[in-house]
Image 1 (tube, rainbow, N blue to C red):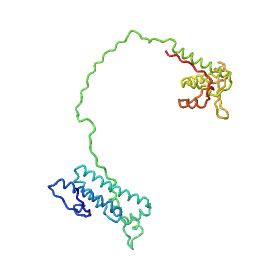
Image 2 (image 1 turned 30 degrees about the vertical axis):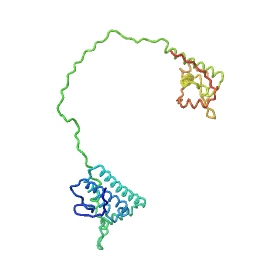
Image 3 (image 1 turned 90 degrees about the horizontal axis):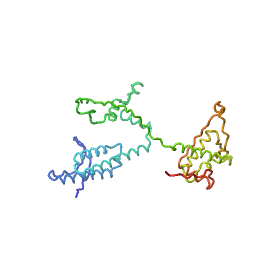
Image 4 (image 1 turned 90 degrees about the vertical axis):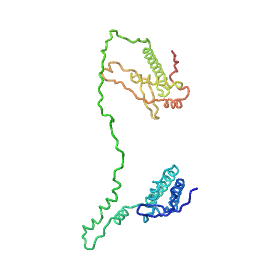
Length: 313
């Protein structure tokens, strides 16, 4: 069982120490218990004297930090490391609460300048000139006080590059002469793949144009939507884009914001060559989420394009 130790602050020439009764050197377990007891006493002192420690008019914070630093040199066991970490955590929380209190109070620029004058200022004599009074701050002492902030951080030196500096001999590479093949390989062409896709697109364009001629003006959503197939909806959108490109359909927006599609007569080839008529395109953003939204917007049975049966090869 650990002994209860009364914690008191005392400063000496060798450093800061806690005034406790030393343990016997022959009993290592007693020394460990004594060390943990001293940590516990430091923790209790920090908890009881929190307001006095953070006061700017006392040096208790420096004394406690020195005590913890001296105890840290004796830490060997995991339990002692835990006690050391808890003591450091209590000191940190105490310091953080003090800083927050100062920030909440609101340190003004005038308070900062007044503190600089109190710590590093020199009083002007009665017979001193105004120029001398302006330079009444001990700038050298002020620079020495803040010099610790600008010191370099201790690091480790490393060597960049290989440890072995021997030059590796380059291996000679024997390149083989490539023989040109006399035979020309041609891949086998599959009949009907590209033509079937072109025929399907033409059929979709023809079906869509006939629907436009019968209805004259239709909503874009009703024209391209296939409620049962996202892929066929995309194909319908492609067919509409080709009709717009060829000048056989046009898209307009009415006052209510609906996109309406209507048929047109395709321009003659001479008009296109002369520049009287120019082909136009449109950009339409469409993904699976837009398709789901379109299925909820368009009523069931209001789709214009028929569903096409796909053949599986």
